[in-house]
Image (cartoon, rainbow, N blue to C red; front, side):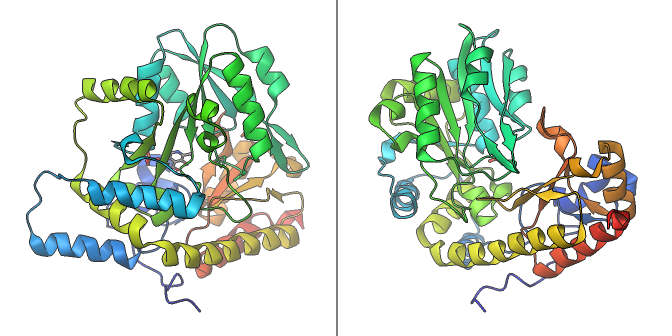
Length: 393
Ligand SMILES: Cc1ncc(COP(=O)(O)O)c(C=O)c1O
């Protein structure tokens, strides 16, 4: 029993939650009333320190422009040092309107239309549109999937790149499939990129949600790699603050930082959301205990799902997650096609997950299930899914 109650079920329907209130528009009328276990936010209240900070702001009652970010920057610096052993300078931190915004800005700042951007697929779905919307093309390279585990395929990558390949968007830990990349894997990838002058955009938004690590910060491996890397982190996944749309671009190299900042200026991004700053400051300064308790709870959910899949869903593999609260369920062993798998989830089980195919090549016949919710909701979902696939047994 922890002092934080992750078992408490909180009604979110009617609270402008995309996960609950966006079901019909995203999945169709049949999804109304189903269990939403898709988009990556949690069913839990934010840490008390965050809600206290918001309450104090509401009590004060004036919500004008934010200024003097010294405690905010110090909180981020302290967190990176404490939780990741990563020594950063406050001057390296730029604030974006979330990480998808930051990744788009990075493409705009460092690529020209016609350039190639590497994605190791299957991968977080908004990256490919970010590349294409900015006039670039995806240089896709499948992760190797062997015995239920993903590996990078640098040989495949060597064949995929050309002189126009300008950038790699790394997802570390990887979403989907929750893979924590080892230091050796990251180093090999970084060397590959540096040899070809390919800029590394390292999205480490899931770096605090690690069960089996350690997580290695790409830019912390060596000064040479840091000079070639833009790192994105955020309090949003870690502390369930995604609606705040506030992220960190951490760039140690002055010329890369200046270029990124120039692009922010061109977009008029001179200041960010007051509430985002307040929430991030409170979370990074005082959210350690809450996060430690959360990780224990999430690990329990992860292990429960793995057991349930093994016992009740023959032919289905739950990919062993090192990190993230997003189960990656492989239905390829059932012999079913996507349409049938999705029909059984959404119409029979009434459980809404992200469709694997939306993560690009390599994603078909997988479902991504968000288990950052009370255990009772996970139990309900697993009963429903096992019922919808009972003919497998
Ligand atoms: C890898 C990855 N990057 C970025 C995001 C979204 O970040 P933001 O909401 O700050 O744009 C997510 C959300 O799930 C994610 O998984």
